[in-house]
Image (tube, rainbow, N blue to C red):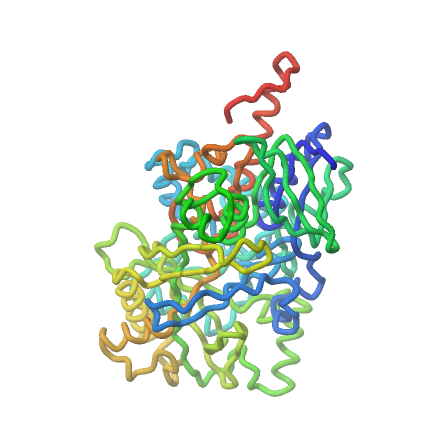
Length: 547
């Protein structure tokens, strides 16, 4: 049985950052366990995603029929490979609004205010080319390991959409990751030369040469090992063999679905539910797996007479798109999201309540194919509610660690979420009615003009709302007795165990959550390395210091 200073579970967005930070000290031996294989080179080209067999790189999760959405079931894409979901996502880089983190701090999470976490984002960023008016070096990072670019050479439909949004009264925002998030602007992507730049590319691969860092892939963690209330190690399966490892400190970075699943499999959760599946209880913690949040998302899809990125333009059109990618790193092979907006659906609101993604390509509905493209020229506006009220949960199906967990989204349990999405559709329609976009709309495919009033739109929302692939909150951070982790990200009631991933979010940030996950990893990495330095600066004794 091998012993390590740190074991990190999950080489995803947070895990790669944590492993990088902890292994900077050559005296600390770090083991990073990843359930999936390394990502393949083809996955770096977003436009080639439809040609990748995701069954090998994704957990293959589906939600339970959702009674709040006419029993709809969703595919919940979650990366199962080195880089985690950052190796299969849309590469949209969004910090979230500064107000989001001030809200976390206001409910008792000291150290998480905007003034304290924004420098962490800055430290990991390398903002490169294409920003409309450059970037503010006092706010944005220029020398970090994570490459970030802004869309260049945007499609004429994209530029028309931005102009129409401004005509509708919304401000142009040249950098929604700067001081203010509100407004509409060109998309920011964690890419380099038009290729995906995952958390593994930025934080892990450059340091795998370190002799004190070891990555083991296709190693599925089955359960934690306890010595009383102390986590002393874990058991994992590799090549059909069970292995046990011990560590001075264990960090879970398995994500908002797998982290609570692993805790429950190890006996940390609701006593009644654990007993029901035959798992001995180590620690009663009812909040594990609860508070599941997801950005509810609906689409407005329109046909256009203008040539879009849909494959309807013949060989010459396709050759032009290929050339745009090869020579400029742009176009649909690089990314189909070319603009984003953070808007208020009602002027009286204190801050934006919806996020829009504009795609100059028509994306249709298909449960088993998230990349389904309409055959005719069209475009898509994705609308999601920034701060959903509804909450779901993660549950165990059985004590079998290889059984998929039960995902109960309850995504539209609160009527306020339906109302916001209806207002979001109406807001998008108002934008599309403005010049120069109005002349480009040939027909609204979804929801369609038959959905003309609020009741019809609410029915469309209940039937067609899907997830934005932003699950969070299932091991929430807080100072109350029910919270799973404290502001230091240490699991309450246990020694030697921390969590750093989207599961710790007390509520959702406005926007895609990948950037926030990397920030969380950086935050915990700094907390733990600072604590280690404190211990070593003392008499040399390995006494535990509060972090």
